Length: 85
Image (cartoon, rainbow, N blue to C red; front, side, top):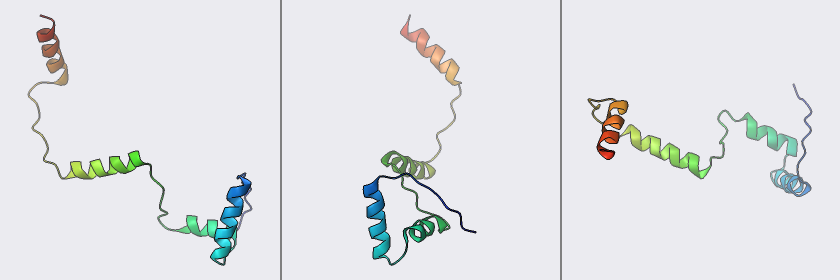
Protein backbone atom coordinates (compact mmCIF):
# COMPACT_ATOMS: atom_id res chain seq x y z
CA UNK A 1 0.00 0.00 0.00
CA UNK A 2 1.35 3.41 -0.94
CA UNK A 3 0.92 6.49 1.25
CA UNK A 4 1.47 10.11 0.35
CA UNK A 5 4.08 11.92 2.44
CA UNK A 6 4.68 15.66 2.67
CA UNK A 7 8.13 16.88 3.61
CA UNK A 8 9.54 20.35 4.13
CA UNK A 9 13.02 20.50 2.65
CA UNK A 10 15.22 23.30 1.32
CA UNK A 11 14.56 23.94 -2.36
CA UNK A 12 18.22 23.41 -3.26
CA UNK A 13 18.22 20.00 -1.57
CA UNK A 14 15.06 18.96 -3.40
CA UNK A 15 16.57 19.96 -6.73
CA UNK A 16 19.78 18.06 -5.96
CA UNK A 17 17.78 14.96 -4.93
CA UNK A 18 15.69 15.15 -8.11
CA UNK A 19 18.84 15.34 -10.25
CA UNK A 20 20.31 12.33 -8.47
CA UNK A 21 17.10 10.32 -8.94
CA UNK A 22 16.93 11.32 -12.61
CA UNK A 23 20.55 10.26 -13.12
CA UNK A 24 19.53 6.81 -11.84
CA UNK A 25 16.47 6.77 -14.10
CA UNK A 26 13.97 6.62 -11.23
CA UNK A 27 11.58 9.02 -9.51
CA UNK A 28 12.51 10.79 -6.31
CA UNK A 29 9.79 8.82 -4.51
CA UNK A 30 11.26 5.53 -5.74
CA UNK A 31 14.78 6.59 -4.73
CA UNK A 32 13.64 7.37 -1.18
CA UNK A 33 11.65 4.13 -1.07
CA UNK A 34 14.72 2.15 -2.17
CA UNK A 35 16.84 3.68 0.58
CA UNK A 36 14.47 2.61 3.34
CA UNK A 37 13.41 -0.74 1.88
CA UNK A 38 16.84 -2.23 2.40
CA UNK A 39 16.84 -4.92 5.07
CA UNK A 40 19.65 -3.22 6.94
CA UNK A 41 19.92 0.39 5.81
CA UNK A 42 23.31 1.90 6.46
CA UNK A 43 22.84 4.58 9.04
CA UNK A 44 25.33 7.39 9.15
CA UNK A 45 27.35 7.36 12.32
CA UNK A 46 29.10 10.27 13.96
CA UNK A 47 32.87 10.11 14.51
CA UNK A 48 32.14 9.62 18.22
CA UNK A 49 29.89 6.62 17.50
CA UNK A 50 32.52 5.09 15.23
CA UNK A 51 35.20 5.61 17.89
CA UNK A 52 32.96 4.02 20.54
CA UNK A 53 32.34 1.01 18.29
CA UNK A 54 36.09 0.56 17.72
CA UNK A 55 36.72 0.87 21.47
CA UNK A 56 34.08 -1.77 22.26
CA UNK A 57 35.65 -4.14 19.72
CA UNK A 58 39.03 -3.67 21.38
CA UNK A 59 37.52 -4.31 24.81
CA UNK A 60 36.09 -7.63 23.62
CA UNK A 61 39.64 -8.87 23.01
CA UNK A 62 41.07 -7.67 26.32
CA UNK A 63 41.70 -9.95 29.28
CA UNK A 64 39.37 -9.07 32.15
CA UNK A 65 41.10 -7.50 35.14
CA UNK A 66 41.11 -9.27 38.46
CA UNK A 67 38.32 -8.15 40.79
CA UNK A 68 39.47 -5.95 43.66
CA UNK A 69 39.30 -7.22 47.21
CA UNK A 70 37.73 -3.98 48.37
CA UNK A 71 34.70 -2.08 47.16
CA UNK A 72 34.95 1.30 45.45
CA UNK A 73 33.48 2.88 48.57
CA UNK A 74 36.19 1.38 50.77
CA UNK A 75 38.94 2.43 48.38
CA UNK A 76 37.57 5.98 48.20
CA UNK A 77 37.41 6.17 52.00
CA UNK A 78 41.05 4.96 52.28
CA UNK A 79 42.18 7.51 49.72
CA UNK A 80 40.34 10.31 51.50
CA UNK A 81 41.82 9.28 54.87
CA UNK A 82 45.38 9.24 53.45
CA UNK A 83 44.88 12.56 51.66
CA UNK A 84 43.52 14.49 54.64
CA UNK A 85 45.66 13.13 57.47
